[in-house]
Each structure stands twice: as structure tokens, then as C-alpha cells.
Amino acid sequence: MAAADILDRFVQQAKGAMASSAIPAEIDSNLRALLQGALADMDVVPRDEFDAQVAVLHRTRKRIEALEAEVEKLRAG
Image (cartoon, rainbow, N blue to C red; front, top):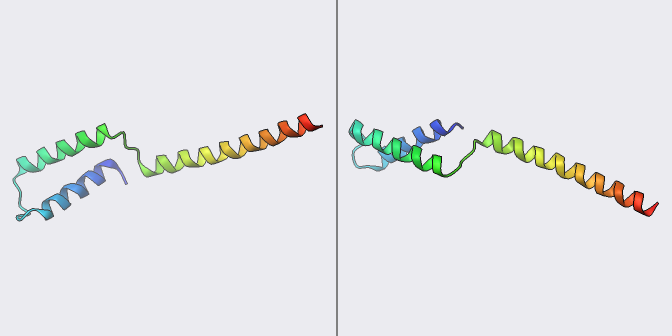
């Protein structure tokens, strides 16, 4: 889910939590700007990017383990 989609969903939930869901446009834009700033400061990445990095790390770990086993084999032999 894109950060913009998360932001839109959060703003809609915030609107729903208020007594009146018809909040003024100024409050809506201020809330959106506040949340965008908070998300930017959090150093958040999209889930697909995170999953891709996890896959890279798993492949790297397997390769390191294979190389370590090969080094041990060479030392023993």
C-alpha cells in the first residue's frame, strides 16, 4: 500500500472518529500535512520494498553459509 493510500485511509478514519464527519477543508488539509510530515520523519518504506530486501538478505545469508562451509572444508582438507 502506498504512503498516500495509508495517509488517505488515516484521514478518513480521523474524520470518522470526530463527532461530525463534515470537517472543514482547512482542518482536513492541515491534518493531511501534519501526517505527511510525521510519515516523512519516520523513515517508512513500502511493504513490497521491505519484502524485496528480506528476500535479498535471505539469499545473501544462504550464500554466506555456503561459503563458510566451503572454507571449513578447505581448511580441513
